Length: 339
Image 1 (tube, rainbow, N blue to C red):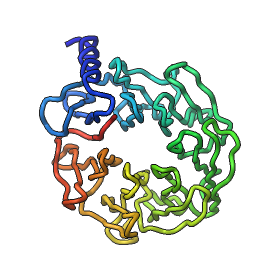
Image 2 (image 1 turned 135 degrees about the horizontal axis):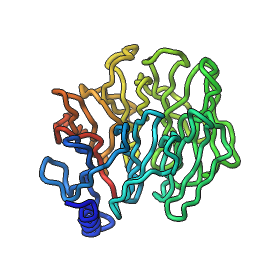
Image 3 (image 1 turned 90 degrees about the vertical axis):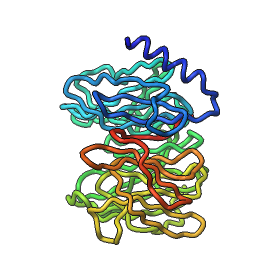
Image 4 (image 1 turned 45 degrees about the vertical axis):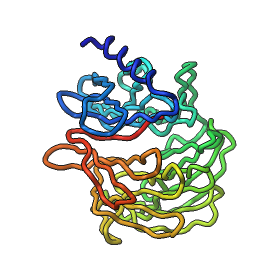
């Protein structure tokens, strides 16, 4: 089957789905890498499938769905660093976001409009934070520090939350600004710890973040914290993984925070799927070991995550009501829903 025909079938599938109807996606790892779409999770033949032709020497790293669209930001690990490609679900096209074969640029965040993306470019040469619009082709380097390592956009698209560090052992700072990096104000400063990853709550009123020691330890013992968007009412929630870069993940209804943490405080090597209940204030640590960033189901009923087992990657679903993780797909990863 030709790539043009595959793209046509992919487009017809998306057109058949109403705008309000969620579509399940996952990456299939068998005879190459492909994005698969289906109406429901499961091992049946997908309704849409697009093989990803990766550049020579590059490997798949992460899949980041765009909000309210059929676009995906695909991170690739290449010999010269991480690069980010755009997979356009409306056309099936898979292309580099920046036309420079030797420039590294990693994914930071989507804008909630689904039409633009934030990247960190030139980490190994001339670092900068840039925003790229897909429709107009407009690109702007933001007037913020090139040492930013984490960034999130508020649900209304009007504010950025970003964290930076001037160097190892010098701690971190967290700032808020408008969506293009202007009118920046310092929100948090800590000379001993690294702030982030940090994420806005769905209503934009709260921030959940990981706090970890600023050290050379590859797997430091981290903590999950919560504070309001003005930097007040900060409080510790519980122990969390800090060495793998997993961000805290709010449920769509804002009632839960999913995160990766240890079974016991101080066990930095462990990475168990954990949940914080906003209503009760209780933390539940499950027996599910996470190998990739989890993703909530659209109705907040549970979380999809990737687990390693039997020399392959498996997509699992943790059902909150049943308190159980079930296998959905073998030889697959990076599952979730797009709207």
